[in-house]
Each structure stands twice: as C-alpha cells, then as structure tokens.
Image (cartoon, rainbow, N blue to C red; front, side, top):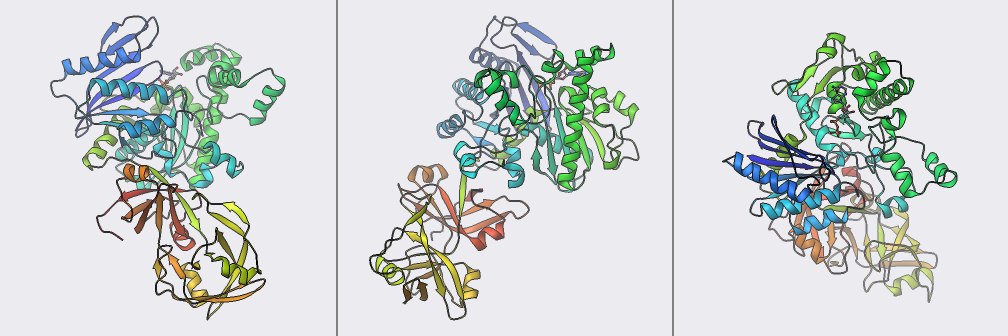
Length: 593
Ligand code: ADP
C-alpha cells in the first residue's frame, strides 16, 4: 500500500511517500524552519528557499503539490503523527470529525504538540478530502505499561481528576526500533528484552519486554527522564516548589526554564552535541560536565530497565545522538559488563548506517547483550501501522472503556432495609458511584446460604422496588447457592437467600444473581462505538500478562449512563485488571442478548 506519512512538528514537517509492501521510500521531503525567515524545502539533494514566514497551511499545500507532480501513482491514504493520544487512543485511528474533536479535547495534555498536528490534519484533509486520513499516536506504544509503571504515587482522586499518569512518548520510534531489531536478529519480538534509547533533541528510553513497552522515561509530559537538548529531564519536584516559593518563578517562567533553557543547553550553552564534544576535547569544563551527566543518566536508566525486565537481550540506540555519536555511545556503555553488555570499540567507531544498512552491531563477540545502532525511521513506522489498519478494514476507533469492578453487593427494598436495620431506617450514602444517582451505602449485611456465610456485604442505594443480591461464582461456592447469570432487574426464577442485619434476619424468596457483564453508555458513545442497546459484544483487556477477551458483554444504553464496563471480582482477577483500567471493544456481533 502507498502511504503518504506526514510528521508535523512546531517548526518542521517531514513527509514521505512510502510503499509499505517493499518498505521503500518513494519520495522524501522536509520543510525546515517553518514560520521563520530561512524556511526551506528539501527534496533529496534539492534545496529551495521558501517565502519567509511560510506557515503550516502553505507548507502542506506545497508538499501535496510536489507529491502530485512527482509521483504518478499517488498515495492510497495519508498518515499523520499525533503526539498525545491520552488514555483513549491506543492504536492508529481513522480520522473523522468525531475523532478529531476527541483529539482536540486532549490538547490540554500536550499543549505544544497536539494543536500543531490537528491544524496540519485539517489542512491536509482540505487538500486531499477523498483519501482516508489516519492518526498514529506517539503515546499508543506505551499503552501496555503495567499500573506499577504507569501511575505516580499521588492521591488517586487527584490523579484521576487531572489525567495524571505516565503516558510515555516517542512511541513510533520505540516501536520501529523494536521491529528493526527483531528483523536484524532474525528473531521474534516475543523473545527479546530490549532497552530502546531514542537520543535526539528530545530523548527517552523504553523497556520493551517481549514486544510490549513496560517502562519508559518520559511521563505525563515529554519532560521527564533523560537530559535532553533543552529539557531538564528528571529533577526533584521539590526544586520546582523551591523556585516557585523563593526563586521568583511563576508557572510560565518555570515552563520555559525546564523545557527551553535546561538540558545540555542549560549546562553548557548549546544543545548541539557535536559542539559540546569539540569544546570538551578542548578542555571546556561545562561541556565535559554536560556530556558526563547526559551519559550517566542514560546508563542509569539502562541499568534500571534491565532490572525491570529481569535482564536485557538488546540495547539499541537511535536518534541524532544515538545514531551519530560513537563517543556518547562509548560513555553510556561503560561499566555495563555486569549486564553482559560489551562494546567493540572499532565497530562502534566505524558504525555507518545507510539506506541498505539500517542496523549496525557494535557489541563484541563475547557480549551476551547485543548492542545495536538503528536508523530512525518514524515515517516508515507510521505508514506501516496505517497500512495494517486499513488492510484490516477497521476504523481503529479505539475508544477506551473504563472498567469498574463490582464486589458482591445488595440492592434492597425499603421494607427489607427496615426489617434488617430497624423501623424508619434510611441507608446513608458513603460513596457516589459512576452512574448518576447511584451510591454505595454505609450499611452492610451478612449473607447466609445453605453452606456458609459472607460478612460485610455492601448495600447499594437508593432502595429499589425488588430485592436483588449480586454475588460472584466464587461466592456461590461459599454460600452453597446456584445463581444464574443475569442482567440487573431480571430476577425470574432466581434463588433466594437469608440476610442478616443489626435488627434481624430476612429470607428473600428470590433475587440472587451472578451479574452478567455489561457496558453502560450513553447514545453518543453507542453511536461512536457502532453498537445498540442490548447488543452482545466482545471487549479486549490488555493487562500485565493476563490479556483476555470477554464475550457475552451486554450493551446498556441510556442518556443517564456514564461509559463503564462492569465486571465482578472473579472476572477482574481472571484478567488481572484493577479499578480504573480500561478495555477496548473489539467486535459487535449481530447476535442479541
Ligand atoms: P530531533 O529530536 O529534533 O529529531 P535529532 O534526532 O536530529 O533531533 O538529534 C539532534 C541531536 O543529534 C543534536 O544534539 C545533534 O548535535 C546530534 N547529532 C547529530 N549528528 C551528530 C554527529 N554526527 N555527532 C554527534 N552528535 C550529532
């Protein structure tokens, strides 16, 4: 498939027409210094100065005109790199107005990057309205991070309210490195533990364990982790508080300090590694410190990520510095013998990447971990992912569905509540549930079955017209009750049970069910996901080593509903998920529940 890949940054646009079947680049174009006086168009060896101050719209128009005039077989789709997909976009996604407005809603998370990409997508859709446009997200590769790597140790409600978690970036680059490494080693990604080091102006490390990203150094924003060209990477958050309280900084000046004035530039006056290497050679102490600090930080992450994965099979370098600085690779790879990583100094010095040599090996014969240099080729990765999406005939509309796990609980009538807790008793709301008006009450009861009892079973409010007790399959064994799998409210021919409260016991004649797994959603979500009320669908859960696809999941649509998959504790444990994890709808078969 021929894909035109567009990679729009704030000051440059890289574009490539790619034949994904043979993996060849049919045309490569680059516009540098957008919006400035020396804006240029580069195509192969050709260089053309563009009108000073050329904006993104004009630039895209020009690129598409060049594409049309130079390639008689035009593209079959346009692929766009988008930096932030939030929690919602975990795979390439066909763009339409709905998806674009969802990406727009994420702009708060990536204020520097997403608005640029969105504007570019808009211009490109205007120019080429009749082809599919696909977004490929930088964060998507890291959607497999396990909760221990994904979450920060902040109060859960604060994290949830502000979307604070590790998203990770450079995903297309780490994905492409993973693919290239496996190809070079003639190995399956499933058998490799790779530490992928993307060292460009922005820099990040990822731990790719058997094909899945399990840790990465960039966090909620692309500021965390390594020392970068102008970004600080890791700093003690206390430093920021100190500067805010005592240094005369405000949010804006701190932002500039950390994003634009720190890193190599902050340490030694320039973010150009070549200049730093020259100056260090001439004895400049600031440049020497910058280089050692840079290398130390990368080495520290490599060691940490080897520990995270229980070992490392490959350490790979890409990006301007990773590919072109043997000196920096040498500094980084010192003292990693304990990981079985041994550099061959000659190979490192002579490593030359070329069109037909996209990977060079720099480890020596005795090195247990293979050390590789990989040509960055993000446009190829974007194109390959887009082609795979289109070939599969899906939209990839990967709207993530948050998961809620229901422990055993009971919905009771006011009459039953009064028998258990005393006349006139009203249950007290303790926590609001995601579905509007529903709450977990402060009160709990004891369930008593023919075989055993279960204490502290939470009541849900408000009171209902019929008594209903929801238990898991495991609970059935404890209680000695055989409950059918039912949707809430469907209580025909269900067994009863005895309930015990502080004021007495009640035996209800029926009402015990094992809840059928279901998804609540409003009509807009249903339209977006292409499902209707009462459809039976499948959802895929990617978890830490316990991925699972659940079938027989019933869709419940109501204007009042919040989008949530409800599972019971047995189901959640089987899939290794926790409250707040998300899943994806994979198929909506025509069968109705
Ligand atoms: P970006 O993240 O903006 O795409 P690059 O991947 O082009 O950045 O990396 C830019 C960095 O690579 C700069 O620090 C530059 O000095 C460094 N670099 C490029 N070529 C060389 C080289 N031959 N030797 C050392 N450093 C290099």
